[in-house]
Image 1 (tube, helix red, strand yellow):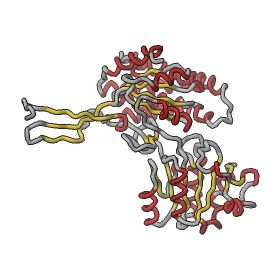
Image 2 (image 1 turned 120 degrees about the vertical axis):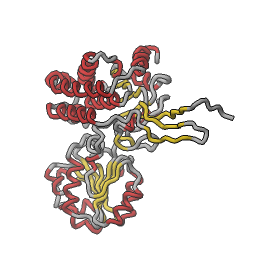
Image 3 (image 1 turned 90 degrees about the vertical axis):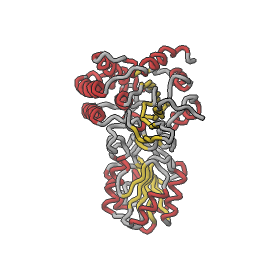
Image 4 (image 1 turned 30 degrees about the vertical axis):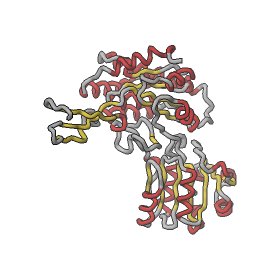
Length: 415
Protein backbone atom coordinates (compact mmCIF):
# COMPACT_ATOMS: atom_id res chain seq x y z
CA UNK A 1 0.00 0.00 0.00
CA UNK A 2 2.69 2.47 1.00
CA UNK A 3 4.98 1.85 -2.00
CA UNK A 4 2.58 3.39 -4.51
CA UNK A 5 2.70 6.67 -2.60
CA UNK A 6 6.31 6.41 -1.48
CA UNK A 7 7.48 9.23 -3.72
CA UNK A 8 5.06 11.67 -2.08
CA UNK A 9 6.29 10.77 1.38
CA UNK A 10 9.95 10.76 0.39
CA UNK A 11 9.55 14.20 -1.17
CA UNK A 12 7.92 15.47 1.99
CA UNK A 13 10.72 14.11 4.15
CA UNK A 14 13.32 15.76 1.91
CA UNK A 15 11.47 19.09 1.99
CA UNK A 16 11.21 18.96 5.79
CA UNK A 17 14.99 19.21 6.07
CA UNK A 18 14.99 22.56 4.26
CA UNK A 19 14.17 25.77 6.07
CA UNK A 20 13.43 29.34 5.08
CA UNK A 21 14.09 32.53 7.02
CA UNK A 22 11.19 34.24 8.84
CA UNK A 23 11.42 37.11 6.37
CA UNK A 24 11.04 34.81 3.36
CA UNK A 25 8.25 32.87 5.03
CA UNK A 26 6.24 36.05 5.55
CA UNK A 27 6.92 37.20 1.99
CA UNK A 28 5.61 33.89 0.68
CA UNK A 29 2.45 34.17 2.76
CA UNK A 30 1.74 37.72 1.67
CA UNK A 31 2.37 36.79 -1.95
CA UNK A 32 0.04 33.83 -1.56
CA UNK A 33 -2.70 36.09 -0.22
CA UNK A 34 -2.25 38.40 -3.21
CA UNK A 35 -2.26 35.44 -5.61
CA UNK A 36 -5.45 34.01 -4.12
CA UNK A 37 -7.28 37.29 -4.70
CA UNK A 38 -5.77 37.75 -8.16
CA UNK A 39 -6.82 34.21 -9.11
CA UNK A 40 -10.37 34.55 -7.74
CA UNK A 41 -12.05 33.88 -11.08
CA UNK A 42 -9.94 30.77 -11.64
CA UNK A 43 -10.70 29.48 -8.14
CA UNK A 44 -14.43 30.11 -8.53
CA UNK A 45 -14.46 28.36 -11.91
CA UNK A 46 -12.79 25.25 -10.52
CA UNK A 47 -14.92 25.36 -7.38
CA UNK A 48 -18.07 25.46 -9.49
CA UNK A 49 -17.04 22.17 -11.10
CA UNK A 50 -17.19 20.60 -7.65
CA UNK A 51 -20.42 22.37 -6.71
CA UNK A 52 -22.10 21.09 -9.87
CA UNK A 53 -21.55 17.53 -8.67
CA UNK A 54 -23.07 18.07 -5.21
CA UNK A 55 -26.70 18.35 -4.15
CA UNK A 56 -27.33 21.86 -2.83
CA UNK A 57 -29.24 20.34 0.08
CA UNK A 58 -26.15 18.44 1.20
CA UNK A 59 -24.85 19.98 4.49
CA UNK A 60 -21.37 19.95 2.95
CA UNK A 61 -22.44 22.22 0.08
CA UNK A 62 -21.96 25.44 2.04
CA UNK A 63 -18.55 24.31 3.28
CA UNK A 64 -17.52 23.46 -0.25
CA UNK A 65 -18.65 26.73 -1.75
CA UNK A 66 -16.15 29.50 -2.43
CA UNK A 67 -17.21 33.07 -3.12
CA UNK A 68 -15.28 36.24 -3.84
CA UNK A 69 -15.93 37.35 -0.28
CA UNK A 70 -14.74 34.06 1.19
CA UNK A 71 -11.57 34.13 -0.89
CA UNK A 72 -10.93 37.69 0.29
CA UNK A 73 -11.42 36.53 3.88
CA UNK A 74 -9.02 33.62 3.32
CA UNK A 75 -6.43 36.05 1.97
CA UNK A 76 -6.93 38.28 5.01
CA UNK A 77 -6.33 35.33 7.33
CA UNK A 78 -3.14 34.41 5.45
CA UNK A 79 -1.88 37.98 5.87
CA UNK A 80 -2.77 37.82 9.56
CA UNK A 81 -0.65 34.68 9.91
CA UNK A 82 2.26 36.50 8.29
CA UNK A 83 1.93 39.25 10.89
CA UNK A 84 2.01 36.87 13.84
CA UNK A 85 5.25 36.15 15.65
CA UNK A 86 6.62 32.71 14.90
CA UNK A 87 6.86 30.44 17.93
CA UNK A 88 9.88 28.63 16.47
CA UNK A 89 12.98 28.93 18.62
CA UNK A 90 11.02 30.19 21.61
CA UNK A 91 12.72 29.17 24.84
CA UNK A 92 10.11 28.45 27.49
CA UNK A 93 12.36 26.81 30.05
CA UNK A 94 16.01 27.60 30.71
CA UNK A 95 18.12 26.54 33.68
CA UNK A 96 21.70 25.82 34.68
CA UNK A 97 22.27 22.64 36.66
CA UNK A 98 24.73 22.38 39.60
CA UNK A 99 27.19 20.60 37.29
CA UNK A 100 27.15 23.55 34.89
CA UNK A 101 24.97 22.03 32.17
CA UNK A 102 22.68 24.60 30.55
CA UNK A 103 19.35 22.95 29.74
CA UNK A 104 16.63 24.61 27.66
CA UNK A 105 13.29 23.64 26.15
CA UNK A 106 12.99 25.12 22.67
CA UNK A 107 10.00 25.14 20.32
CA UNK A 108 10.51 23.22 17.07
CA UNK A 109 8.22 22.13 14.21
CA UNK A 110 6.17 18.96 14.56
CA UNK A 111 7.74 17.91 11.26
CA UNK A 112 5.46 16.40 8.64
CA UNK A 113 1.78 17.05 9.30
CA UNK A 114 -0.83 15.00 7.46
CA UNK A 115 -4.35 16.38 7.22
CA UNK A 116 -7.35 14.42 5.96
CA UNK A 117 -10.41 16.55 5.24
CA UNK A 118 -13.63 16.56 3.32
CA UNK A 119 -15.33 19.21 1.17
CA UNK A 120 -13.52 22.21 2.68
CA UNK A 121 -11.20 23.88 0.14
CA UNK A 122 -10.36 26.71 2.58
CA UNK A 123 -8.55 24.08 4.66
CA UNK A 124 -5.97 23.74 1.88
CA UNK A 125 -5.00 27.40 2.26
CA UNK A 126 -5.22 27.38 6.07
CA UNK A 127 -3.17 24.25 6.65
CA UNK A 128 -0.40 25.28 4.28
CA UNK A 129 -0.15 28.77 5.75
CA UNK A 130 0.01 27.60 9.36
CA UNK A 131 2.39 24.74 8.61
CA UNK A 132 4.70 26.87 6.47
CA UNK A 133 4.85 29.57 9.14
CA UNK A 134 5.90 26.98 11.72
CA UNK A 135 8.46 25.18 9.57
CA UNK A 136 6.29 22.12 8.99
CA UNK A 137 5.63 20.23 5.77
CA UNK A 138 1.97 19.41 5.11
CA UNK A 139 0.64 16.38 3.28
CA UNK A 140 -2.97 17.04 2.35
CA UNK A 141 -5.63 14.46 1.56
CA UNK A 142 -8.75 16.27 0.47
CA UNK A 143 -12.05 14.67 -0.38
CA UNK A 144 -13.09 13.89 -3.93
CA UNK A 145 -15.99 16.34 -3.51
CA UNK A 146 -13.53 19.25 -3.55
CA UNK A 147 -10.80 17.89 -5.80
CA UNK A 148 -11.05 20.52 -8.54
CA UNK A 149 -10.93 23.27 -5.92
CA UNK A 150 -8.03 21.73 -4.03
CA UNK A 151 -6.00 21.16 -7.21
CA UNK A 152 -6.48 24.79 -8.17
CA UNK A 153 -5.41 26.01 -4.74
CA UNK A 154 -2.34 23.78 -4.56
CA UNK A 155 -1.27 24.98 -8.03
CA UNK A 156 -1.33 28.57 -6.76
CA UNK A 157 0.62 27.60 -3.62
CA UNK A 158 3.23 25.78 -5.71
CA UNK A 159 3.60 28.71 -8.07
CA UNK A 160 4.26 31.11 -5.18
CA UNK A 161 6.77 28.69 -3.64
CA UNK A 162 8.51 28.32 -7.01
CA UNK A 163 8.67 32.08 -7.41
CA UNK A 164 10.66 32.17 -4.17
CA UNK A 165 12.79 29.14 -5.17
CA UNK A 166 11.36 27.06 -2.32
CA UNK A 167 10.73 23.32 -2.66
CA UNK A 168 7.09 22.89 -3.71
CA UNK A 169 6.97 19.70 -1.65
CA UNK A 170 6.49 21.88 1.42
CA UNK A 171 2.84 21.31 0.49
CA UNK A 172 1.75 18.02 -1.06
CA UNK A 173 -1.77 17.20 -2.16
CA UNK A 174 -2.37 13.47 -2.48
CA UNK A 175 -4.76 12.01 -5.07
CA UNK A 176 -8.41 12.11 -4.03
CA UNK A 177 -8.73 8.32 -4.18
CA UNK A 178 -9.51 6.37 -1.02
CA UNK A 179 -6.27 4.37 -1.30
CA UNK A 180 -4.31 7.55 -0.61
CA UNK A 181 -6.06 7.86 2.75
CA UNK A 182 -5.08 4.32 3.67
CA UNK A 183 -1.47 5.02 2.69
CA UNK A 184 -1.39 8.14 4.84
CA UNK A 185 -2.80 6.23 7.79
CA UNK A 186 0.10 3.81 7.46
CA UNK A 187 2.90 6.29 6.71
CA UNK A 188 5.00 5.29 9.71
CA UNK A 189 8.40 6.95 9.66
CA UNK A 190 7.21 9.62 7.26
CA UNK A 191 4.30 11.46 8.88
CA UNK A 192 4.75 12.77 12.43
CA UNK A 193 1.11 13.50 13.18
CA UNK A 194 -2.22 13.10 11.41
CA UNK A 195 -5.15 15.49 11.82
CA UNK A 196 -8.62 14.58 10.50
CA UNK A 197 -11.10 17.37 9.75
CA UNK A 198 -14.64 16.46 8.87
CA UNK A 199 -17.55 14.30 9.91
CA UNK A 200 -17.59 12.05 12.93
CA UNK A 201 -17.47 9.11 10.54
CA UNK A 202 -14.20 10.38 9.04
CA UNK A 203 -12.70 11.11 12.44
CA UNK A 204 -13.67 7.68 13.77
CA UNK A 205 -12.15 6.00 10.71
CA UNK A 206 -8.85 7.83 11.13
CA UNK A 207 -8.68 7.21 14.87
CA UNK A 208 -9.50 3.52 14.53
CA UNK A 209 -7.19 2.78 11.61
CA UNK A 210 -4.21 5.10 11.81
CA UNK A 211 -0.80 3.77 12.77
CA UNK A 212 0.41 7.38 12.83
CA UNK A 213 -0.28 9.52 15.94
CA UNK A 214 -3.62 11.36 15.60
CA UNK A 215 -4.87 14.67 16.93
CA UNK A 216 -8.66 14.54 16.83
CA UNK A 217 -10.50 17.62 15.61
CA UNK A 218 -13.93 16.41 16.53
CA UNK A 219 -17.38 17.02 15.21
CA UNK A 220 -19.23 19.72 17.10
CA UNK A 221 -22.33 18.67 19.01
CA UNK A 222 -22.89 22.06 20.61
CA UNK A 223 -25.25 23.04 23.44
CA UNK A 224 -26.37 26.35 24.87
CA UNK A 225 -28.10 26.30 28.25
CA UNK A 226 -30.53 29.14 29.01
CA UNK A 227 -30.45 29.33 32.78
CA UNK A 228 -33.19 30.45 35.14
CA UNK A 229 -31.11 33.62 35.61
CA UNK A 230 -30.59 34.20 31.88
CA UNK A 231 -31.24 37.54 30.21
CA UNK A 232 -33.96 37.07 27.58
CA UNK A 233 -32.71 39.63 25.07
CA UNK A 234 -29.12 38.43 25.29
CA UNK A 235 -30.26 34.84 25.06
CA UNK A 236 -32.41 35.33 21.95
CA UNK A 237 -29.59 37.08 20.09
CA UNK A 238 -26.91 34.60 21.17
CA UNK A 239 -29.00 31.56 20.26
CA UNK A 240 -29.95 33.05 16.89
CA UNK A 241 -26.33 33.82 16.04
CA UNK A 242 -24.99 30.47 17.23
CA UNK A 243 -27.56 28.57 15.19
CA UNK A 244 -27.93 30.58 11.99
CA UNK A 245 -24.68 32.45 11.35
CA UNK A 246 -23.31 29.53 9.37
CA UNK A 247 -25.07 26.23 9.92
CA UNK A 248 -22.51 23.99 8.21
CA UNK A 249 -19.62 24.64 10.61
CA UNK A 250 -18.71 22.69 13.72
CA UNK A 251 -19.32 25.54 16.17
CA UNK A 252 -22.98 25.92 15.16
CA UNK A 253 -25.57 25.32 17.88
CA UNK A 254 -27.29 21.91 17.86
CA UNK A 255 -29.26 21.81 21.11
CA UNK A 256 -30.91 24.52 23.19
CA UNK A 257 -31.42 23.56 26.84
CA UNK A 258 -33.93 25.64 28.80
CA UNK A 259 -34.58 25.76 32.55
CA UNK A 260 -38.23 24.93 33.25
CA UNK A 261 -38.75 28.19 35.18
CA UNK A 262 -38.21 30.09 31.91
CA UNK A 263 -40.72 28.17 29.81
CA UNK A 264 -42.93 31.26 29.54
CA UNK A 265 -40.06 32.99 27.76
CA UNK A 266 -39.34 30.13 25.35
CA UNK A 267 -41.47 31.48 22.44
CA UNK A 268 -39.65 34.82 22.62
CA UNK A 269 -36.31 33.04 22.99
CA UNK A 270 -36.75 31.25 19.64
CA UNK A 271 -38.81 33.87 17.80
CA UNK A 272 -35.91 34.92 15.57
CA UNK A 273 -35.27 31.28 14.69
CA UNK A 274 -38.83 30.96 13.45
CA UNK A 275 -38.37 33.96 11.18
CA UNK A 276 -35.34 32.19 9.71
CA UNK A 277 -37.30 28.93 9.18
CA UNK A 278 -35.21 26.92 11.62
CA UNK A 279 -36.81 23.53 12.31
CA UNK A 280 -37.14 22.78 16.02
CA UNK A 281 -37.23 19.25 17.38
CA UNK A 282 -38.71 20.00 20.79
CA UNK A 283 -39.16 17.62 23.69
CA UNK A 284 -42.70 17.09 25.01
CA UNK A 285 -42.69 20.04 27.41
CA UNK A 286 -41.12 22.49 24.96
CA UNK A 287 -43.47 21.36 22.18
CA UNK A 288 -46.54 22.11 24.33
CA UNK A 289 -45.29 25.61 25.05
CA UNK A 290 -44.28 26.37 21.47
CA UNK A 291 -47.37 24.96 19.78
CA UNK A 292 -49.24 27.96 18.35
CA UNK A 293 -46.29 30.27 19.04
CA UNK A 294 -43.87 28.90 16.45
CA UNK A 295 -44.44 28.13 12.75
CA UNK A 296 -46.18 24.72 12.57
CA UNK A 297 -44.22 23.74 9.48
CA UNK A 298 -40.98 23.98 11.44
CA UNK A 299 -42.00 22.49 14.79
CA UNK A 300 -41.78 18.76 15.44
CA UNK A 301 -41.59 16.36 18.35
CA UNK A 302 -38.04 15.44 19.29
CA UNK A 303 -37.00 11.82 19.14
CA UNK A 304 -34.11 10.36 21.18
CA UNK A 305 -31.74 10.48 18.20
CA UNK A 306 -32.15 14.25 17.87
CA UNK A 307 -30.13 14.74 21.04
CA UNK A 308 -26.45 14.16 20.41
CA UNK A 309 -26.76 14.98 16.70
CA UNK A 310 -24.63 17.47 14.79
CA UNK A 311 -27.24 18.81 12.39
CA UNK A 312 -25.16 21.04 10.08
CA UNK A 313 -28.45 22.53 8.88
CA UNK A 314 -31.24 24.88 9.95
CA UNK A 315 -32.29 22.40 12.62
CA UNK A 316 -32.18 22.62 16.40
CA UNK A 317 -33.13 20.30 19.24
CA UNK A 318 -34.82 21.81 22.31
CA UNK A 319 -34.61 20.23 25.76
CA UNK A 320 -36.28 21.41 28.97
CA UNK A 321 -34.58 20.58 32.27
CA UNK A 322 -35.78 20.95 35.83
CA UNK A 323 -32.47 22.06 37.30
CA UNK A 324 -29.00 23.36 36.56
CA UNK A 325 -27.62 19.94 37.49
CA UNK A 326 -29.90 18.30 34.91
CA UNK A 327 -28.50 20.65 32.26
CA UNK A 328 -24.95 19.65 33.20
CA UNK A 329 -25.93 15.98 33.04
CA UNK A 330 -27.48 16.39 29.59
CA UNK A 331 -24.39 18.13 28.25
CA UNK A 332 -22.11 15.50 29.78
CA UNK A 333 -24.11 12.74 28.11
CA UNK A 334 -24.32 14.20 24.61
CA UNK A 335 -21.43 16.66 24.22
CA UNK A 336 -18.65 16.04 21.73
CA UNK A 337 -16.48 18.27 23.97
CA UNK A 338 -16.20 20.96 21.33
CA UNK A 339 -18.03 24.12 22.51
CA UNK A 340 -20.65 24.59 25.22
CA UNK A 341 -22.35 27.76 26.53
CA UNK A 342 -24.46 29.06 29.39
CA UNK A 343 -26.62 32.17 29.35
CA UNK A 344 -26.91 33.38 32.93
CA UNK A 345 -26.57 36.57 34.98
CA UNK A 346 -25.66 34.58 38.10
CA UNK A 347 -21.87 34.81 38.42
CA UNK A 348 -21.53 31.81 40.73
CA UNK A 349 -23.58 29.59 38.46
CA UNK A 350 -21.62 30.72 35.44
CA UNK A 351 -18.33 29.88 37.15
CA UNK A 352 -19.65 26.48 38.12
CA UNK A 353 -20.58 25.85 34.50
CA UNK A 354 -17.11 26.88 33.32
CA UNK A 355 -15.45 24.63 35.88
CA UNK A 356 -17.61 21.54 35.47
CA UNK A 357 -18.36 21.35 31.73
CA UNK A 358 -15.72 19.30 29.92
CA UNK A 359 -15.21 20.92 26.52
CA UNK A 360 -12.45 22.55 24.52
CA UNK A 361 -14.22 25.91 24.69
CA UNK A 362 -16.79 26.97 27.29
CA UNK A 363 -18.75 30.23 27.13
CA UNK A 364 -20.75 32.53 29.36
CA UNK A 365 -23.20 34.87 27.65
CA UNK A 366 -21.61 34.59 24.20
CA UNK A 367 -22.19 32.72 20.95
CA UNK A 368 -20.32 29.49 20.34
CA UNK A 369 -19.71 30.79 16.80
CA UNK A 370 -16.54 32.37 18.21
CA UNK A 371 -14.77 29.00 18.46
CA UNK A 372 -12.47 29.75 15.58
CA UNK A 373 -8.75 30.29 15.25
CA UNK A 374 -9.04 33.75 13.74
CA UNK A 375 -11.56 34.84 16.39
CA UNK A 376 -9.23 33.62 19.11
CA UNK A 377 -6.38 35.70 17.70
CA UNK A 378 -4.53 32.74 16.20
CA UNK A 379 -4.66 34.01 12.61
CA UNK A 380 -6.37 30.83 11.42
CA UNK A 381 -6.68 27.26 12.59
CA UNK A 382 -5.74 23.81 11.45
CA UNK A 383 -8.74 22.41 13.32
CA UNK A 384 -10.54 22.41 16.66
CA UNK A 385 -9.01 19.71 18.82
CA UNK A 386 -11.47 18.01 21.16
CA UNK A 387 -8.87 15.82 22.84
CA UNK A 388 -6.63 16.67 25.78
CA UNK A 389 -3.19 15.45 24.71
CA UNK A 390 -0.89 18.01 23.09
CA UNK A 391 -3.52 20.52 21.96
CA UNK A 392 -7.11 21.46 22.75
CA UNK A 393 -9.45 23.88 21.02
CA UNK A 394 -8.44 25.95 17.98
CA UNK A 395 -5.01 24.83 16.81
CA UNK A 396 -2.87 27.74 15.69
CA UNK A 397 0.86 28.26 15.37
CA UNK A 398 1.97 27.14 18.84
CA UNK A 399 -0.11 23.98 18.57
CA UNK A 400 1.82 23.02 15.43
CA UNK A 401 5.08 22.90 17.36
CA UNK A 402 6.71 20.50 19.76
CA UNK A 403 9.91 21.11 21.68
CA UNK A 404 13.35 19.71 22.06
CA UNK A 405 15.73 19.77 24.99
CA UNK A 406 18.90 21.68 24.18
CA UNK A 407 21.81 20.87 26.48
CA UNK A 408 25.05 22.89 26.44
CA UNK A 409 28.07 21.68 28.33
CA UNK A 410 31.77 22.30 28.75
CA UNK A 411 33.05 18.75 28.95
CA UNK A 412 30.80 17.30 31.65
CA UNK A 413 30.52 13.53 31.96
CA UNK A 414 28.03 11.67 34.13
CA UNK A 415 29.49 9.92 37.20
